[in-house]
Image (cartoon, rainbow, N blue to C red; front, side, top):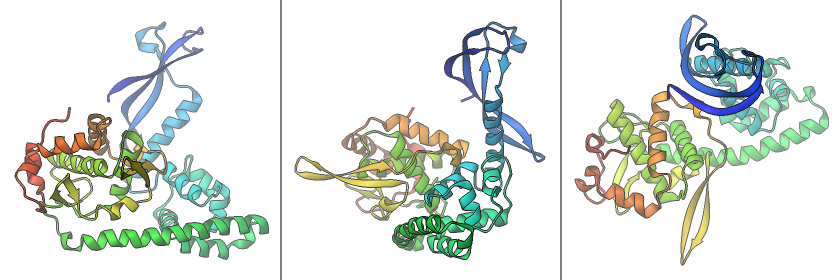
Length: 346
């Protein structure tokens, strides 16, 4: 995507001074931030009634949004939480911006600034990550700063954090199960696509497909993961998630396929399908595309567009024709090197 039309909207155009339909557009561009060039997607408006050289404009609110995208692009480049991810963490515990800051012992407007314009330092960034991953730590910080809340609000927040603690404890055990299954693949090789398992990336990829793909059940999800890793490997010489796949009856199946269905971005719902039980996959939150690199998102969109409306059997049949499946045997690990002969998805 270089430059595309987002929508047409009727406004009082500041360029020509007339109320009419203008184009709201989105384009890839660059900005200089803190001495570094970052890539981001800019929203702007186009008036077709003015001279070509003076037909663009950006309203103040849209400009603020564009600047936030620049800051988030910088954060991603530095390995820091984006504004959306910070918002996601406090929402996880049912906290407002000021409550999150108070719980962590910071100034009341600190989180508000982080979600709007200020870039957090690594120490603050690390603490926010830790309380998201460890609800017990969140509970400890809440208790430590309990005097900063009303008695009623403290009780409400504590109840919410304790509920998350129960969920996160179970989730932690599931994630440990997944990692334990991959201890024999800790070295980069042709079987993991020369990348060790990245559980966080896997979690986000599965959440993406849960939002973007129709008729999504367990078997189909596993094929989407294989195609994602295979296409990414063919383009970049390494897999996206680090999953290891086996040749099974229904196509490529990642080691730990049952365990990875417990990632927090999806929910598995049992459905009766004639006399069988189907395992439908639904998202637990909306996709935030900013958490993916541009090259990753390109592959995800390609795979989603290709198989969006496929039923499970259709994608299984499609995968059965791949050289990676034809040239491997039952229960044999599928080497990523066979992805070089992958069928074109476009």
